[in-house]
Amino acid sequence: MLKINLPLFLYCAVVVAPLQAQTVVEHIPTHTLNEHFTLHNDGTTTHIVTGLIWQRCSLGQNWDGSTCTGNAATYTWQGALQQGSSSTFAGFDDWRLPSVEELRSLVAYDRFSPAINNAIFPNTSTSWYWSSSPNANSSDGGWIVSFYDGFDGSHSRGNAYHVRLVRGG
Image 1 (cartoon, rainbow, N blue to C red):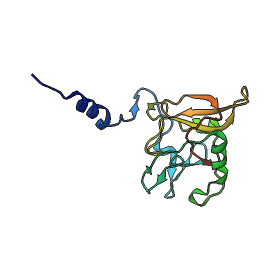
Image 2 (cartoon, rainbow, N blue to C red):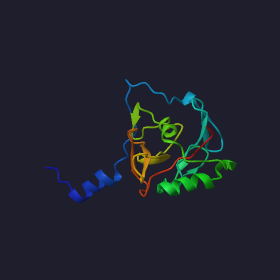
Image 3 (cartoon, helix red, strand yellow):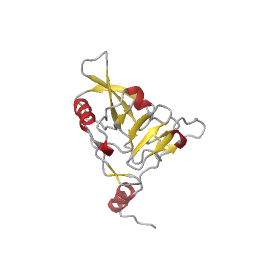
């Protein structure tokens, strides 16, 4: 009879188990192909379809030349807006928080966890990201996009969510 030390088994199953990898749904066409992006050596990428230049890492992470390291920081809506106006990443000072439409252009609807092209935007959090778009029906609402599944919605501007900055447009 096999005896299992239950606390050790649970520790191994929960703590040591590998993180679930991104899931790709094969029958849904992608619109965020690698060919739609031009990669730059400074941790930015140009989305050829929109002409926008994006930071490849979320704020709080660092670009090490090949991937994003560290943990993405979270900000309130006002804090996210301020981060955009004060960033000098890659030597540019015209970074800003993207509109909800711009942020949606990064969603890869053919995949989830995260719902973004991992080759272009490595180690993206599967959580909510702020946009600069206020909710016209709520004096305290701002639009957000989830990079777990690509859904968007409006939440209180006092909540803390992740940020990816953009320039151009």
